[in-house]
Image (cartoon, rainbow, N blue to C red; front, top):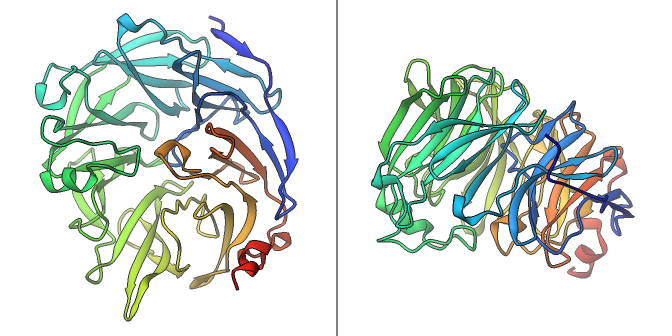
Length: 403
């Protein structure tokens, strides 16, 4: 099957005004285009293409971007409202060359080879996990190592009690945390559709992230204000049911979050914000720890503005997005270098999709990010030069003007 539509390249290239780095604006459409979250794998076809969602013709659909040609291909058609709203999971199962979406309580697989669609799993009717309009309150959707299973989170629906608008300034975030909704993690066999409950608790569970290399090992978080949750990061062995805290809090008021797997699939990266006596600004560390709790590295890296999203392929270099710049920061033993500007994103952070959420390409040579600097969210792709050629953030004209 051919794509529903091929859009001519929208790509333009410019030189960043601060760093001199080459930046490619990949999309340019009067509708938001959103790349996968930094914990999800977007890449396929030998990492020549990535998937993203875009609002075009008044419908949100799944698209692919070809880095060589600049072509944008529409992979789904959700324009027929009688089939109900779709929730697109922006993650590629590399082993099956497949991605997934929910519609009317059914999990579907979409082949990226021929765009064929197959039903995988129909969620049992359970009003606890459905909104008043009947939409299943399902999250997650990342596949584990080997591509055999997908992990789904079901969260008790509280919409009759709590008004939420998480995508815009986290309205209802604290109230949902305090309500302790029933949450279940399901492991679904992508061949048979068989589902197995691997975790359940009366606590708000989020960010279900399977290791990309270790079968049955995944992290999840206790969602809520970082300084109030009992422990942010947890490791679950879906094969045995064993659950353990990962990097327990070491002092009152410590905030931990934004966890993600490094490329090795054995190490988890995260942020730590520590109260500073007599100073309202917290001291920030970027941490790395193995899934079994060993090999902890926490390097001084702050203070950081919030929100700030940190991502890395290894323990040597991170990319972050706080403020108005995409920054690269190199680890130097027990501390990080001062931030260097890769390019300016100038995004508003006004709602979730306008967060840049920068991520390295699998080869570490580029950074993909989002920005709404032109009104709509569009996707950008920055080339990475020699690290030492980049200017320090505090040496930029804007920083010097504040002195």
